[in-house]
Structure formats: structure tokens, C-alpha cells
Length: 178
Image 1 (cartoon, rainbow, N blue to C red):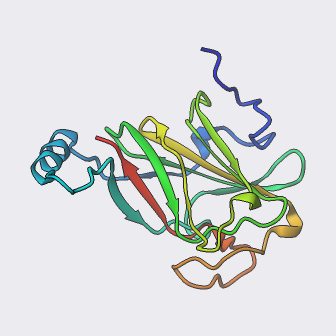
Image 2: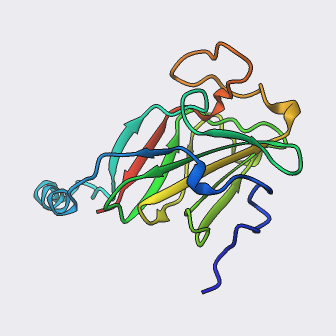
């Protein structure tokens, strides 16, 4: 399979290698134990769980790496690793993408990519729940023009104290599929 490359037009051009981007490592989950617990809780009328929800509070103010792309836009990236995960999807609890902004998710080898998520994905409830990305590691990348750098939504962690903080990302739920 040819997959995608670092030259995919959805990726911001001219950034540092993925290996230089901060990686948040989630606690490893025991998939056998999760399956056993799920089988024990299943009964008629109870919806099956497809993932283990791991609450985190991730913000560009506290995690990740800011860079300027070749086209002059500001780009924030963060890698999340969850050992033994079959897939990961993210739930942004405060999502309000400004005009000319975008969010993409991809595997560190660039073989799988989801997005872009754009202002067209903004909803009244201000949440974004992404599709599942197979694998145990995911890169979050958001790009926006310099003019939009300080716009966005305040995260649950509190108001940003300085304009270099990009608050729109909010809290993220990492899900693992046993």
C-alpha cells in the first residue's frame, strides 16, 4: 500500500521530524483483562463498550510543540501513545475551529491520516469526537494562520494567561479498543 507521505497536502509543510515532537504516553492497558470485564458486564439491554476511556487534560499551553510552517502558518503538534491499543480516537470537549484553521490526525509513519477537521465541523455543543485511527500512536496537528493564533475556545483547564497559548484544544479523551 502506498499510503500517505510526509508530503501529503493535508500536512503542514516544512516542520521538524515527528521524533522531535513531545509524546504523551498513556498507561498501558491489559486488553485481556478489559475483554474479560466486558464479557462479565454484558447482558441484554446493555450496550457493549468498544473502548476504554482515559481522561486527560491536554492543551497547547502545557503539551506539544509549536512551529512555523514553510507557508508562515503556526502549527501545533503532539503525539499520544497508548501501548497495546488496537486503535485510538479522541474526544475534544471544547472544539471551535476558527476560519482558516484545521486539525488532522495521523499515524507517526504517515500511513494513516484522518481529516482535515475544519470550521465546518463546529457544532453547538462544541465537541468533536474523531473516527478511530488504527494503531497505538497518534499525532495531533493543528494549523492556523498567524492572524487567528489567539482566537478559539478556553479549555477546561482555565483561561490562558498569555496570547501565546492556544486554548481551543480543550480536554481530550483517549479511547483504546481491546
